[in-house]
Image 1: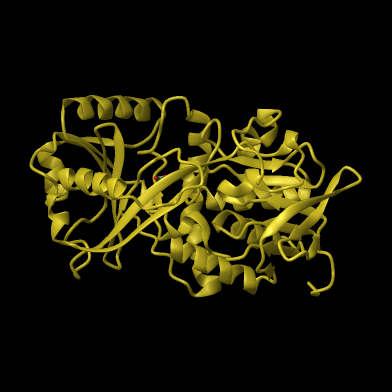
Image 2: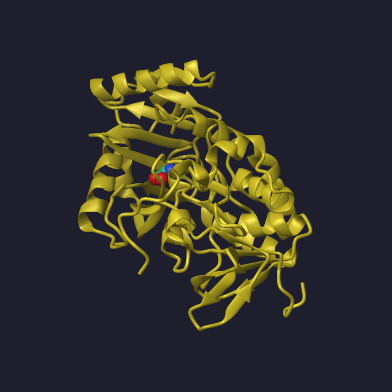
Length: 388
Ligand code: GLY
């Protein structure tokens, strides 16, 4: 694309969802640009990267399960393609997940989850506490049972983001390092954005993929503004002993006193422990209480974490939506599409989002698996906060 020509597509937001959309659109022959002050940043800097369609199944989210599974199935080819194109490893580990119970209430909760998984045709195996500890010897002696899910894997979101930046560059995507401040609407159609330094960026179609910030872009008419809110998640990162797999070999997770806690061991030796879930607006402070709760709950599962080096604490904002599912595709405003609201599943849903958006940008139609996630399902957006 020549630097002066108007692109077919402008993606607002250079997190993993915006980048995958831009990459896939460029691969389909569309002249594509991305606008973001820090491409490859966003929630992927914080996320643990669990690809957990089965262990994160919730009642009432069976439609979302279909999309999650469609994306999980794409991951092996998606990761291989991205690595081949860019030379970046993604830390993709088909390591499986073990969800465990620490007391009778947790055990009952896990039994319910197992029944729901079985009704949904998903593979999960019930294990006794002793069987759990045989798989993961660092687990606490008090573990009462668990669910072994070999199909729930992990990827390193920071490496994924870096690879997607590189894939965009190699595919001819133009990257504008600036903040989109206002959508431009001309003759009832979205035609571009104005950035914070006053530069106008015109495009044939605009995709709003700015994560939790998607509901704050000025100039978007209220009836199409996505009903997306920030949901804070705090995580801590520890470092495990050098020999891979000796501390934990797979993701371990549980619900402790009603809070989800998970431990995600990477091949690099990093152990990610997450995550709080807090409705705190735009606050991204790492709090003593948040870190304390994560370490306390993780310690109940795996007491040996107290011996590990604490290397990082961080908080990010998930883009929550009213039904916990993403908003994908055209809005009521011609020329404006959404790829946002991925909430707890942004990393998992990256491959299917890129494919769905590339389809709709080229054909005007969402593919069947993405149709239930049309933004039109919400009608007029109801927001707790108006654009700043
Ligand atoms: N999917 C994990 C989280 O959002 O914390």
